[in-house]
Image 1: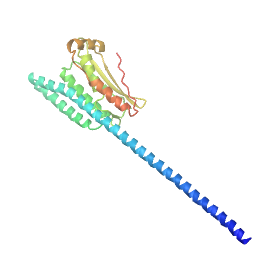
Image 2: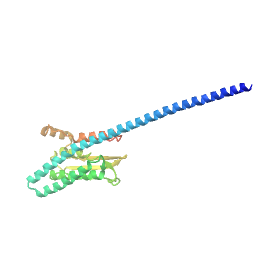
Image 3: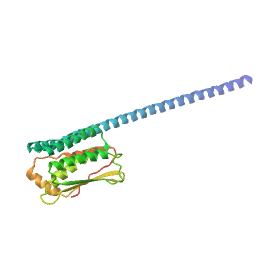
Length: 249
């Protein structure tokens, strides 16, 4: 009886021991599976992070390239104006224009180093640009930049030179084609639903008439500024900003 009891106890202990070993093997395999899944998840996150960083870098590089194409556009016009003042022996206007032009170039170089700048810097650069255009067109138009008091222009960040092409179009194609009456340009920046809303408004001839004049005078001329701004906004929208452009005649 004693030997039989010992045998039963031994078999029971052996079964318990085997169950423990089996449990440890299952737990080990489960832990190994979880570890592999965790490593795969980390690798996937790293891969997605790398991909996102690459896409962001590509977008920023493309924006820099677009800005690099945009900046010389009105710099070229400014140099032509300085040359015209010099040829006309208009020293006072040539000096004033050159001073404002140098400030604007310095601001452009500073602003182009970052994808976002303060609204204050953007509006200062825009004012310099408008001053240059007013001088170039011999004060044949007036402009006004308005910002409500509830906007902190020193804190809010915006893409540099994003509205400059629209202002340029308003002056060159809208106001300068107007033969009679005053020429007015208004630029405003307001805050709507956590977005900055720019409004560029002119009392020029309108887009349809401007297009007809362009087809007669400069049919080969291609304007890229607004298309560049649209492309830059498209790049920002890839980061879920959801900005938009609305043109109203």
